[in-house]
Amino acid sequence: MLDIAIVGGGPAGLFAALALSKSQKLKIKVFERASSLPGFVRGTGLDVNGMKAFRAVDENLFLRIEKEVVGLVAGATEFNQQGELLKDHSKASRQSEFDKIKEEYGVPAGMISCFRMQQIMFEALPEGIVQFDHALQGYTEGPEGVTLTFQNQAQAQGRCLIGADGSFSCVRSMLLHDGPPASTGTVTWRGRLPWRPDAGLPRGRECDQTYMGNRILAGLYGMPDDLVCWVLAAPVDLCEQQGVACDTHANAGSDSTQPAPCDAKPSGSSAHERCMKVAQRAALQMQNVVGLTSPGTTTEHGIYTRPAAELEKYTEAGWGRGRVTLLGNAAHPMRPTGQGLNVTLEDGVVLAWHLQQGGLNPSSLRAFEQERIPRVAQMMQQDQALGSIAFQDDMKAAMADLPMAPDNYVTFRNGWEPPKLPLAASNFGSSA
Image 1 (cartoon, rainbow, N blue to C red):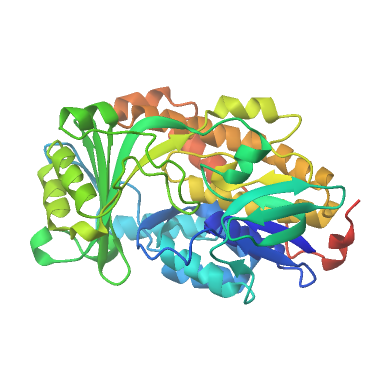
Image 2 (cartoon, rainbow, N blue to C red):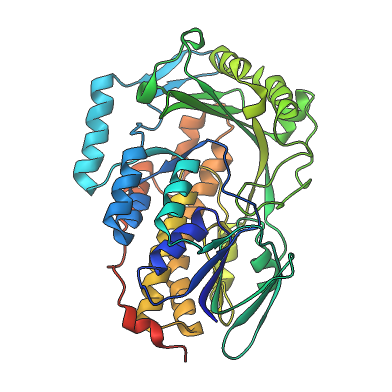
């Protein structure tokens, strides 16, 4: 029997396995429905709290991740829909702000290739922990553990089950029976292209631009290997005005490691054509970048979340049951405003600490959940408020209505400190 079975081989599952495998005596398996790690290169925000989580788990892992982080200053160059400059930081001030963050908190913050991050975590795990081509079909819980059945007819048993399988979590649907997350009514396109002079963009880490207004939110940022990644988001009603029909429920939740797609053809030329139509409402610079992008690199997906208020009903009982718990998007799917990954990394460290302190039993899982709920709820409230104003013409003015003022939120977010690891292997023996 395994000590811990983890369903979902995305960032949540891989990081949880790393945090828990600090004890060499633990038997852990990560079961992923896909046949391999995703190969699509996109950037994701790795903030101070996320970097603290990496450092808490393993210093060498942290150093490998740190080398991959592109230290951008969020919104360093901002433009309105007409392409007029709203805010600009000189190269010197950008470096100064990046250095200030590292000096104040002891860790950097920036963007990282999601693929490289997952690859580093995968390589840091002992060989054989991650099992691909294992899509969960169901599970049953007994007095001593959980039995998992997979669509390939394989079975596994574990003393605890962790559902880390994304916003449309199979584990959650069987555990809580509370239905799928709700569409935010937003469509997001992502793409990448090699840096090129005719794109009119700064190069490398100096490429950090945000475009807002006209109910479009878009941005582009430099990544390692001379790549430029971009994202463009718009509300569904605006997409439909541009002749792009959207079914926010089509293909939802088909992949545990990727966001749920918005339409039946979420990638490639179809997605690129649809994005080009919506990009006509964006600044000319963004239109140019999207136009220069190879259609095969463009993906499209909807954004699905659960309301922060929904967490309140789990305050006492927790979001798990028995020997089963959830973490990351399976527990608290968030808008992509920069904290989804980081809150997930926090989850992994806190879960590992509670299992070390209390043993592999339901009480430890509930203690983990009850510690996380208040903080996660506040993060989700801010996240949802940011999402609600993202497509207003005057986003800056609307920020006055956020639950937490931006400076207070930064302090709340970055001030988090992880529990002390490494774990004591002897404490993992209890299963009572």
